[in-house]
Length: 307
Image (cartoon, rainbow, N blue to C red; front, side):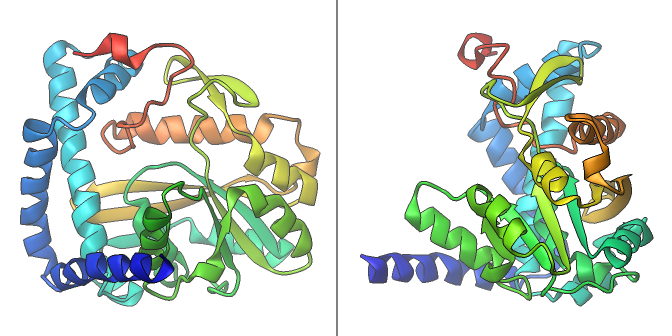
């Protein structure tokens, strides 16, 4: 069974890698086609997207929701095609092409140099799939891939899990840089005396089972507070990263300090600060977030909100 699963992964990887060899300009054209397929043909999660957008931006008219939905489909299509393109490009090449640049890198670097370990919180903004190149994109970085650890949620389907791990470890970012969310606290405690940069994608808890509730984008929103708990338990400083768009296939990774000593904060303070920064970035670029997830199951039934 393992052999068949490995064979299936390589069979799926082969056409993806071949497609990756096409230049970025071709992938941008392909992204237009993918956006059309997702939005007009497949209507991928259209009811979820429209419910999320109309609920968080009540100022939008019906036409406004349609326009923003279309922009979102283009954004997701760009992410898909850019991620495929990046498979056969080094992080240095991605930086040279201007696809990813960094502002505020000295904030993250300063925390790493001063304290040795840093917890970094981010949401699904921009093309988060390109973030593993941060140690190369940032001119200030002295941390490398021996220092970087990212939390991830294991998939229930073993083939999907194996494919995900192959795609994520295609470059200098390897499987050793990935730790499952369920094992993250134990890993952080075992390596608390080592210099590490821990990355957490910390979007909200959609099932209403989060440890903290805030007002986010005008809605009652619950959050998983695991990243904050780990930072407070270990006394790490905490930083925020927002991935903002400056154009198609142009992302600016912005680093900001949330706190220098998580132990000195009140419970929920770090998560609230993260939510506020994430909301700011979403309001600045409304299509630049992962709207196709059922993010507010705790307050409405998506099936009843089909358009």
